[in-house]
Length: 244
Ligand SMILES: Nc1ncnc2c1ncn2[C@@H]1O[C@H](COP(=O)(O)OP(=O)(O)OP(=O)(O)O)[C@@H](O)[C@H]1O
Ligand SMILES: [Mg+2]
Image (cartoon, rainbow, N blue to C red; front, side, top):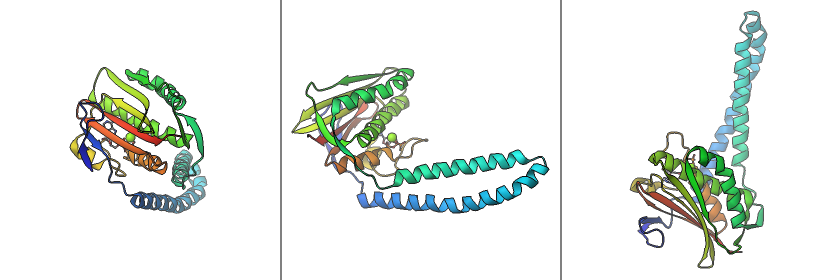
């Protein structure tokens, strides 16, 4: 559902309240992708076996290094598939009580050097209250990293020489809020309509998984993500989480 909303920056006019993401659909995508990855391993094992058999003959022909390179590449593909299958495993949520501000300070540290190199100012306006949430630390980190990465990429896309990202926390309506505001390229109406759909991306190197994963995680904690944006001016992503 798309509706105009003025609870955020006045210049940013569009907010996504509900999204197109269907949980079962996402689960199916994960299941099929994991099945596919698993099946790729079987022919790879056969190829590797035959290459090993051929290696002595290739060495005799002075082409041993070709076999070495091919075998190394097969190992690399296997590593990527194993990593992928690990990522696709059902998530085990390790909830703990976290100080939101502490997590955000750690996030800023994480992006400190990248933002410096890219000439992007990272500001924080953290609530003076000790906001606490009950959530898996790595999942929260995953959400925040995805959102800041998107903000950085939006600024790069905009060619804005004075990029800034503002990270804010507040308590509102008995909920903990994290706002990530950027002055990047903003989003078109078409993009807004498809946000949170797995594999929707406008980037040549993007996979379009980031926001879908963020939403899945935040939904799990009975939270909510909303996005308001103004094309060519910037975007504001807000996460609401239940207060502990
Ligand atoms: N802060 C932002 N500013 C502008 N556009 C954004 C922002 N965040 C997300 N988008 C848009 O939403 C799309 C989907 O974002 P999402 O994070 O899901 O995937 P992605 O960034 O394209 O790829 P990845 O899987 O690597 O994160 C992006 O391609 C981009 O068009
Ligand atoms: Mg992304």
